Image (spheres, rainbow, N blue to C red):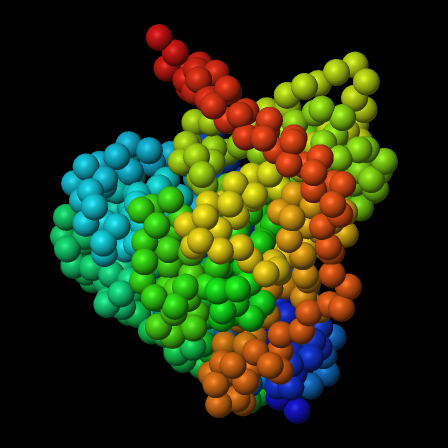
Length: 503
Ligand SMILES: Nc1ncnc2c1ncn2[C@@H]1O[C@H](COP(=O)(O)OP(=O)(O)O)[C@@H](O)[C@H]1O
Ligand SMILES: O=C(CO)[C@@H](O)[C@H](O)COP(=O)(O)O
């Protein structure tokens, strides 16, 4: 018996999934952590909290699984994308990680576009957006020059855990693509971009394939968690790329929906095409392949915010238990999930969320349903852009992320997207992808297709669109779509007011 461990470094929690070589789940463990918001628009985490979470998960797994220390063969990762980790010469983080949903870098994005213009799209397949890593580097250069002067390496979050386990510094193409510093077709760091923004090539980590081995678990870590044999560590993938592998996204007919902290709609791409920046375009974990995606910045994050602010200490199940007593469309109550700005289709760091249509008849359950519907409407925006850009509709969609645990959310997705929705038999798409990378890396299977056959299983119960609901949602979505333009100016003024910049 051999095991592989997939570690998913999410934005809200770190999840570990231990699987057998044959592809069945042995156990799963998780550890939660918070996001720091020191200022409006700022979103940070100290890398040490990820290490603490990993140690908790490894401790719990090693205590529960008696042969963990002798049967574990390989580890790999999936991780929140784009977030900037900076290390000094001792490989110590010297600034909080600036996260993917931090929107402080609008000025730097403008600078990048004015210096690089279409060249950026040609090289990276993307335009500059606040969430990506390059603008964060520019922000640090400009606002924390003393910190930047001490930076010896930049890293992506999951790669920091790779460093913790192996002592080695690497990244791989799917995460490197999200930095805006990778030539995604040539599979190399772009010297042209690095030179344009005075970034030494020395600070960029060595690149390997997702399935590439970055080292073995160090003796210190093995002793700490009672591991006796040699454990190989593989680079892994950006969480959305790993999830794409984990759901078997190796064909353009199916799409992936993720309601994690962010919300994502993604699709496999066999060759380089950019969508003029309307969708993100990155390298897949599958060598030589790509995927496109649209991102709602605060999907699960909006639901979390709603729970923390108005949930009176209730958990998700209790808080959402009565959403089915509310009609489709929440009796005319709309919610837009723009609580930290938005990416797709509105690249707007200053838009903010709203409840519209509040009436004296609305109760808390209407607000709960409106939040869930607003999140799905926003995902529908991305799905529609993707289908019209590709000129075809998805046969079905696989739903992953925390939101997919809730059957009412699944049914809303089926009705709002008018597409059959399918779930995995395991809860974790990205973590499953990480296990698959480790299983392939360990040589348990000759190809990723073979790993997919063994590891990826869909639940038999699917969620099919209900015609009456689809028709109702179509009407309400057409109204919902107008909320962005109707609230844009107001939101921008309110953000300026809050920042003390309202003239
Ligand atoms: N039981 C549940 N029902 C509905 N939504 C849930 C449930 N559990 C978690 N979520 C949502 O999923 C989100 C976390 O999803 P997850 O995929 O773990 O995110 P991440 O990978 O970003 O840490 C939470 O913010 C929450 O909104
Ligand atoms: O920024 C993006 C994708 O571009 C996010 O999707 C992050 O990768 C975080 O993912 P989750 O923690 O929400 O899974």
